[in-house]
Length: 106
Image 1 (cartoon, rainbow, N blue to C red):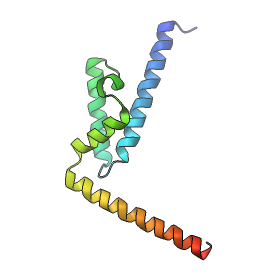
Image 2 (image 1 turned 180 degrees about the vertical axis):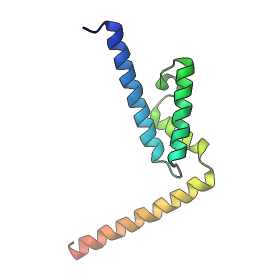
Image 3 (image 1 turned 60 degrees about the horizontal axis):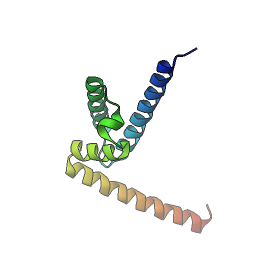
Image 4 (image 1 turned 90 degrees about the vertical axis):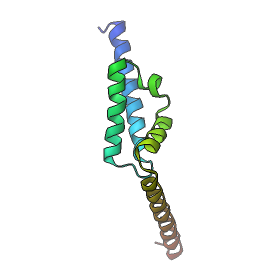
């Protein structure tokens, strides 16, 4: 049978994993973020937590907010703006195509 400390450790590890997963997903959805940016941000968080022993939530707060901050810090503004414009065009085009399908009955 697991001791209380082992159970607490396992629960803490699960919470860290959930925080990191949420952070990565939110980061990946930010304009201009590519695989290299996600890997760099994850490496920074992991290294900090390994050095200090802190939980990522304690060190960085909400994973969504930290993802937005990390993207702003790691992605050049011009690249993020260009990606944002591209995303807006793709979303508009998708909307038009959906309307066309609805009108055509497809």
